[in-house]
Length: 371
Image (cartoon, rainbow, N blue to C red):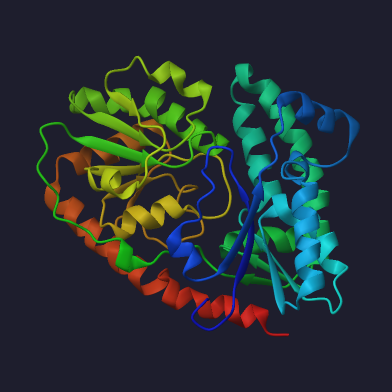
């Protein structure tokens, strides 16, 4: 966007980050940050019991950010203010007070009420997860009301897939939604010839305290990996991503599984994959991890929900499987077929280049900004 527009970014600084702003970001836009709020379990419980707001509406409540945003809007005129994700939606009230009022664009990264609905239904399958299912049920109902209200207040609503757009239209009949897919700069993701490894490696990547990712890895490790190991005893699973949730600690004693924690760059790890896996059973939106692996030319096995929102074809760009037996069988087939892995990788790379490079996607967003 910065090639044709003047961009200013107001964002949070995570407690784990240093104060330095990435030079690549500073090169394209003006950046200001404030400290991200920290909410403990007690505060979350208080919000659950004393308000009708979903947890996501309270998660990033910051008087400092609200004041900084108000000062920006009073000092200079903005044509468009884009609100990135539902956690920041409460700040729409600050934007609405600006004179003249800028165009308010709400970028709904996931259809959040649908994500919580799916999380609830998934957790109901296991009695030990019924407390989490009850929490998700409450959030699902609260998010339906809150997300609908946000969509009605915004001048433009963006979704990352047609599936999410359809879910938002069911929530708010008649809502106009512009689909602007997740994208990447394919120039930063260059496939490399696969190196023959003594130990075949399966890779999953993502933020590892995110509930759908935790569920995916636990399901794969418990239900799928043992089946794969029967055919490939030496196979390893590499789980790449920051802040591994304590629920994943049970996997640390398994010598076939490595949890990396935070890494500076996930690409070298994804490149090590003989097969990249996306065993998601819960979620919404679209998975950027899938684009990254496809752009790097990796052979992929995914659940249908994991590939939701992308017009991929089973057997063309990747393999789709939903049950433990199907997922294990697809993975084993690919581990034993280097030529087939290369064929899928080439098709996946071409798919991303044609549809999901930023150079193809940015014009879609620009059309939504026009009054």
